[in-house]
Length: 306
Image 1 (spheres, helix red, strand yellow):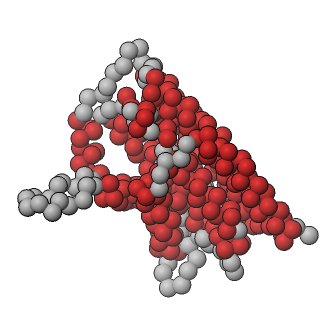
Image 2 (image 1 turned 45 degrees about the vertical axis):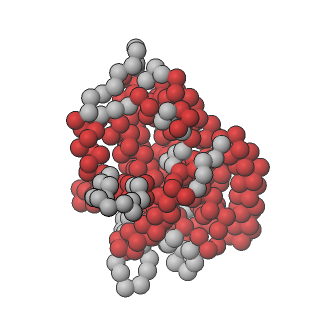
Image 3 (image 1 turned 180 degrees about the vertical axis):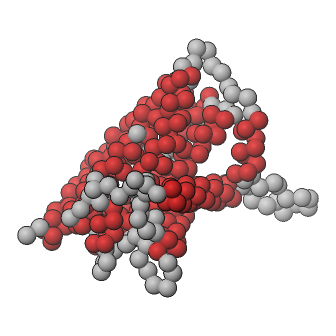
């Protein structure tokens, strides 16, 4: 049974990280200061955007399926929260499952139908194409992503997140399994349809999946997207960076520092890296990432298995 304090702590941590990621993203995306005299341009921020969307009317298309859209939006927000329930964020997780890695991956995959339902429910061409793009992207990143998780679980001899953290007492898996770590970071971008993997929200689709969303619906969508990105970054800490282990600071502080250290490059990638076409990412994933992960899995298996 989850303790109320742990649930509140998880909710507070996720809310703070989502807010911080949104503020940092807005800062990076703000226009540069003009050299001409005059007041500087206003910096868009999460608070202003939340206030704007809360008072904005919902956009209606012809014969939309509002139920599917609402289901998709709620799933997009709840899936990363449920995935985070098994993460030891500075201590014991909210739910310490024996199959924590499996649960985490299962909740991630729920983002697939969530985005597709949002695209389908709008009954509009561009959101639907964006939804299909994300399904294709999922087919490209999920196998390397699963192999990365399997490699970690094999090295630790456990599917429990706390067991994986304990197994990194002497050496972080980011050092021992660098290929798995890099593949995980790439799949985190694809999972959150972020940065170079943001084609489901491409400009050529007038915004893609959320093109017809406005008001509270768009606010839920943005919150869900940031939540997926934050939880993907937070999961890298117990999986590859030794959890909350570290000198001087308490475990929760080290977990926060490591999460931010992973989250910042992911947010920056949106503003520094070009978009990747889905067909090329599919080829790269199946022809490069999967063979690399199989080689990494083989090396780890040779080391740990008797």
